[in-house]
Image (cartoon, helix red, strand yellow):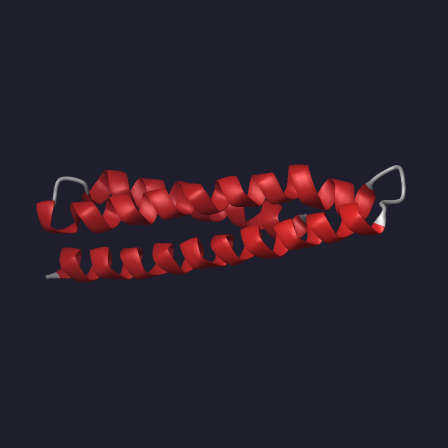
Length: 103
């Protein structure tokens, strides 16, 4: 959980601030919006993983049955893969926006 909690306060406000500062430049607006949307989606996925999966899977009061554990692990892998994909989308969109803003 420390991994997720440390990244969100640093990345999401930075992307949103960049979107707000560069919004007046039409050529970068769509990339800034994409970066902000991907960042928000990644943050939402991280919150979901911590609250709905990690706490039950790793810190639950009761031992999990094999079926429940397997279901939670499948969910973790799927949502984490999506979270990594949107992080890549954030990086790509931020790079494109930066390139457009510097021209």
